[in-house]
Length: 366
Image 1 (cartoon, rainbow, N blue to C red):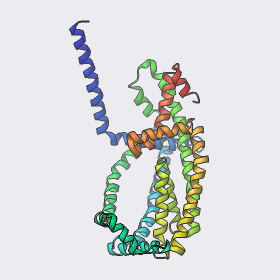
Image 2 (image 1 turned 180 degrees about the horizontal axis):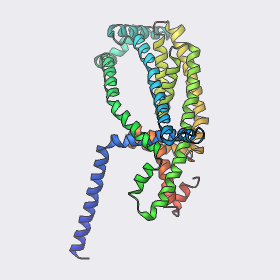
Image 3 (image 1 turned 90 degrees about the horizontal axis):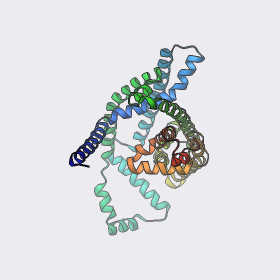
């Protein structure tokens, strides 16, 4: 091996490395577009059965069926937003978000009632906090003006979200209108002798993910029903909206139920913030907590095993490890897309590396 060959090899390796870095940088710059494509693909998977029903049963033309499906999904989305408006207005009123002094007074009242219920005095607690300097640090960092600032940031985010919403609707329309559009786009980057394998992989991925997302919808519906019943029993206003919002958090594995549970209990307590703590607020919060526990037990021992074993055909322990690893690498977004992404990888490995012993063991249930 002469110096020229070594130099060419080094230059080729540097060129490949530079190309990979450039490609990663390109994907990083267009990450919002990639997110739009992923969301649109998921919506197309969910809307495809509706399109087929309209075309086959009601004899709708393809374009009309797609338009009707898009209007149906858009009406659901707008209906959810409309349901959230009374909840935000009611909680804003309960928390006196526009009156910071009133909010401080309500929190102080709740603080005193909590201490009285557990038999502690404010003097002892304040002395303990002052000795450990916790109170000083908390008061120094506690600026309740962040609440209206946070609401303003939400408004700005929603205004910017309109561009993304239009993009997702536009892309989803063409994905539904031409179900092979995404597949044909991917095939342009695949050698001709591998096209058949990729087509089989895409078809299997579509079937598995369609069942997976249908299972997720069933999971959210079960939790929604349990949460709604729990909130109705204790008499919380906007129970349906709160239950839907907290059930929706379960899309995020493991962390989502905690966020949803804390949110539901907090909204329950703030809904009765003017009532007595020991006789009203605490019992109602306990009832809601029991409802949350029942919902999570059903979800953990019935819904999730059924979804993972029947839809994506993976063991729950296998899914747990994948979600944890994806969360450590990519955060919350990684946890959300971990199962669909892992399923797609398994299907592709089985089609292209079917003879590999490790792949055989990994994909034996597919």
